[in-house]
Length: 477
Image 1 (cartoon, rainbow, N blue to C red):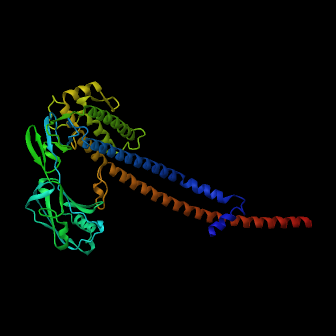
Image 2: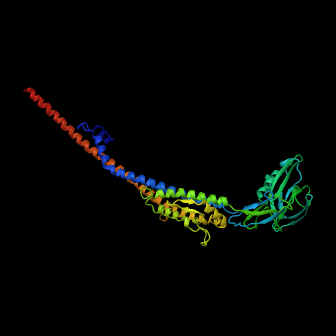
Image 3: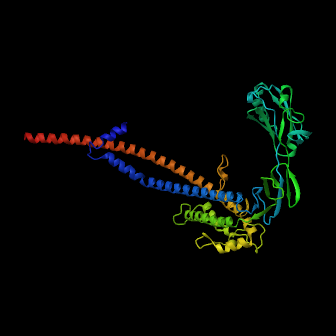
């Protein structure tokens, strides 16, 4: 407050705008320092932005290619001659070139579905408490009645029915909560509500349900009064190239290597051909899209390390990224490949232009796709080939991220961003120091000029007194 008061009265003695003068002198004193710090700060901001952008874009490029190859669309796919009977799905890592088989679906797998007698009072009917015992095995069913049952090796499962679950609906809820291998529901019609119990598919999933006391009214199985076996538990039955096989489910993954068969409908006497189709168009598009994305990122890296005005022109990680990108087209993507087999991007028609960007020779690519389809697929295999090569480049460029206590292990562009950020923090500290020094000098000069101005005012007062005195003397004469 004292300095502010002095500043408001400056210049009253000398007639000079000392406040403005002090401000100009202080600003001039620190002008070069402030300009230097501002320029350094702007440069560091540009470096952080450029390095972060390269990290992000390189990561996205690598991730996008990994997701594309993992989707399976760039690999040979299995085909079904009749998808209304059986559908096919390629399993991860499968090689399906030359796949040829014939499948006949004679029977679908199904679980046992059984229902109790109807209870006229509906789902709220009070049944009672006790224990339901569930036993799995194989069964013989005739006209909705279980005529024979052989228990499996698994021990029977007891399901407790307490007072909170003593209604028909409560029993269904208790069965579902037990996760015993069956599901229960209530079906209601004009005659009342029935407890319906269903098992997983497979002949071994037939079951008997027996209850203690009042729960005996829910018995399912041999000699169970009122219960009905609506659907018989059975395996899927089919032939592969004439060989009869059975499976407990309708989804079969170990019959044809690399292919999952999903049985949709039984069609005795109808043979469905299983084959494969090459992803020629998808692979061609993938090469073109890869080159387009590569070129965009390459130009960004090249501009960032431009020796004249690139923000990362002195950054070793950015320069190394450019070097690795330049070598990507001549990197072998198929381990152990001979010279006669295309194994590099350059071998399939991806050429490097004079400015370092890539172009696709469509004619060459089409020829190689036709002559070496397996090798092209291998280049775009999941976690291998081009995906692995690009991932290696990306991991090296991005580097390790800083973690507590291990900052000395930060590498690549992550280290660059960390170093630039530290330098920027240092600039902020320097600016704070300059600001403090500025205010200190401003205070000191203000005090000095205030003292000077006070003396000038005193001199002026004396001058005025003397001038008036001389005028008085002269007037006496």
